[in-house]
Image 1: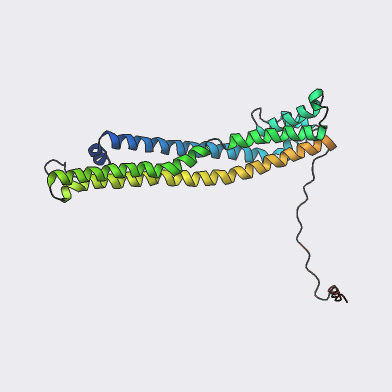
Image 2: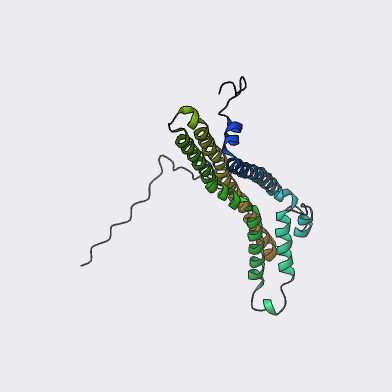
Length: 254
């Protein structure tokens, strides 16, 4: 066997294990590679989208609310901006509150419905790709386990053919089984971590979106946005300040 193996080459590495595993091992390896590529693609694209929206949310006070009108401020935003879409849909609902369908709905509810619908669409777009991450995180270990089962099965076949459990007959298939298990976990763990991280960041982005929607709603109906008052820490009582007297205990009923 030593004569067949080139000097310095590992006969139990990844490529030799896949070659020994045959088409099934190569197929499972390809599926895991595709899952890994999809995981990292979704992670980086979603991070870029979330970062862009968070950066744009920080500029809303200067770009939108310091403009002469809401329409002028919205026009300063990027044409593909989710915040611009939210502002335009709110203004469109406010300006087109007419017709038979809106006779029984006042302007307040009509604008609220429009803003909620747009916010829901933005949230749906932000969550795109996350179900695929969840699926990869839950199925990749089982795909690796399938490769493990195939490797153990091949090891048992080699033992049956040889009539004895020699190390040279089982080392290759068992090594293949362990490699497929490790590959499945290597694909699943980043997918699960990316899903949880992106989901938490989506909540922060949607909070900015809902806050902007509330400001638009207040501006359209009252002419001013909701004021943001920073919370002040409670003042500590002075050392010599008198404490309020406790309330008298209720008398028992006679």
